[in-house]
Image 1 (tube, helix red, strand yellow):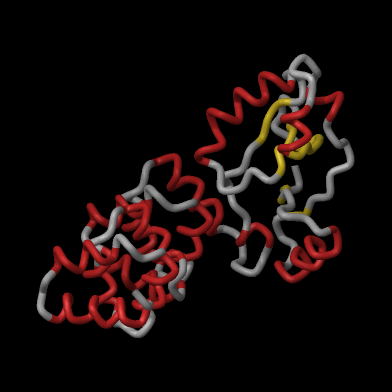
Image 2: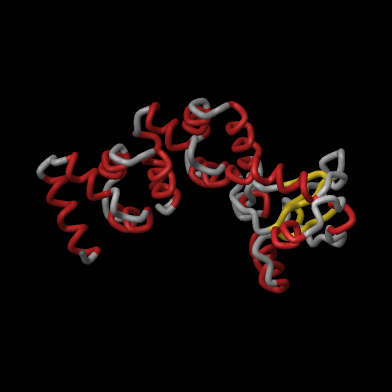
Length: 234
C-alpha cells in the first residue's frame, strides 16, 4: 500500500472514530511516517493520535516534530501518557522539547520523570540551546581505563542498551575525567586480557560545553567523526 493511500485510510478511521482500526494501521507505519502525517494537525489532534501509540513509538514521533509543537502537545496530554513517553526518550531530546516551554510548565513535566532522568534534563537545560552542551547527549558509553578489554565488553552489554550512541567507547579515570577513546571494533578484536589504557587512543579531540554548535559541526566534519565528546572546565 502506498503511504498516501495509507494516510487517507487513517484519516477516515479517525474521522469515523474507528480508533481500534486506526491503532492497527499506525503499527504498520514508521515513526517518521507518523510524524509526516501529524505535521498539519493541531496539538490536540496530535495528542489524541499519540495516545494510540506505545510510549517508545510516541517518543520517537514526538522527537521528529517541531520542538515548539511537541512542547505544546506535552502540555495537553495526560500525566500518565506523558510520563510513559518521556521515560522512553533520551535526556537531550526531552531537553530540546522542554526548552520551548515556560519554567512552570517545565517543572510540571520534569516532576513526571524518574528523578535521575529529571536531574540530567535540568543540567542540559542550563546550557544555551545553540551550544555544545545544549545539543549533547548524556547517554553515552564510558569505561574505566584500568579494566581489561574482556571486562569492558561485559560492561558494554550492561549499559549499551540505554546509550544513545555506541560508535565510540570513551575512557575515563577514577575522577571521571576523559583520558582516552577506543572504537567498538578495536575493543571487540582486542585480547580480552589487555588493559584498556594500553590499547586506547590517548589523544582525544573534544569540545567545551560552551562552544557554539556550528563550531562543533565544523570539527566533526573536518575529522569525519560520528560523535565527539563534550567536556566542561573540570
